[in-house]
Length: 374
Image 1: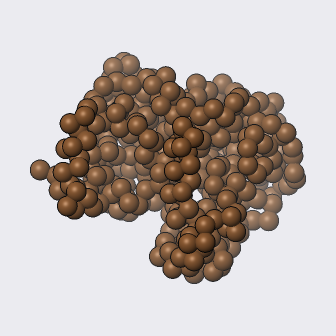
Image 2 (image 1 turned 45 degrees about the vertical axis):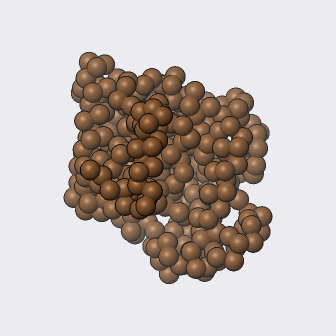
C-alpha cells in the first residue's frame, strides 16, 4: 500500500480523488487529446517580427542570434548554429534547455554564443552536461541547431523587481539551497525568487484557462516553425532534444506538433503514480498540467505520436524519479509502439548514476539521431 509520504496526514486524499474518477487511466490517448488538454489561445504558431541580431563564426560553428515575438511579453532571443561553411539544407534540431530552477539564463545553459560560455552556467554545465555546450557539438556534427529562450527563462524571464516583495525577501535563502554552485549572488538571488514565483505564474495560467506546460509548448512550436522556415534547413528532417525539463518540453512539443521526425527525451521519464511519494516537490509545474491526470499518464504524452521515432534516456539512480516509475513508463510507451506496429521506432537507454545528460548520453543521442534522420 503506497504511503504518499509528502501528503502525511492527508495521504488518504489520493483515494478520495480516485472516488470521483480514475487517475492516470490506462487508455491510449492521441495527440489530439494532448492538444485539447494543453489548449492555449496564443494565436498562430508563426513567429512575429523576426530579426537577425548578430552573426559570428567560431570554433567550427557559424552562428546567428535571432529575435522574434510570440505576441506577448519580451522578445525571444535564440541561437541558430550550424557547421562552419555548410551549404545546402541541413537536418534541423530544436535543442531545449532544462528547467533546473535555473532561469536567469536559458539557451546559454546548453549553447555558446559569439562570446563563448557565460561564467554563471559553468558549475551547472559541469554537474549535468559534462561541462559541454552540447548544442554547439551537435552543430559541428552536421546539424542546424536552434536553441531559444522560452517562457520565464533568459530573455523571456520575469523581471525580479516585478515579483512580489515576499518572493524577493526570501530569494537569497532559497537561491542558496538550489545547488547552482558558487556563482554570482545576484544570479542565485534571481533563481530563489523565480523558484517561488513559478507557483504564482501557475495560478495565473490556471485562472486564464491554460497551464505552464501549454504556454511553453506553444512557444516551442513557434521556435520549431521558425527553424522549419529557413532555407538552409530540411523541413522534412527535424528533431527535438532536451534533458530534464528540456526532455519534458521535447515530449510536449512532439505531442502538439506534426513537424518532428524524431524526439529525444533525456532524464525525464516516469509514470505519475510513483511520484506521489517524495517525488513531486523537485519538479516544475510543467510536469503537471491541470486536468491531465484524468486523461492519461505522463508517458502517454511522449508515446502518443507513435510511430514517429522516440529515444528515451533514463538514469536509474536519478534522484528525481524512482526506478519503478522509469521501468513502468518504458513498458507503457512500448504498448503504444507495439500497437502502431513500430516497435523498432522506440528505443530506451538506461544508465547508472544520477540525474544528468553527460557526454556518453549526448553521444548516444547524437548517434541515434544520425540513424533516424539520415
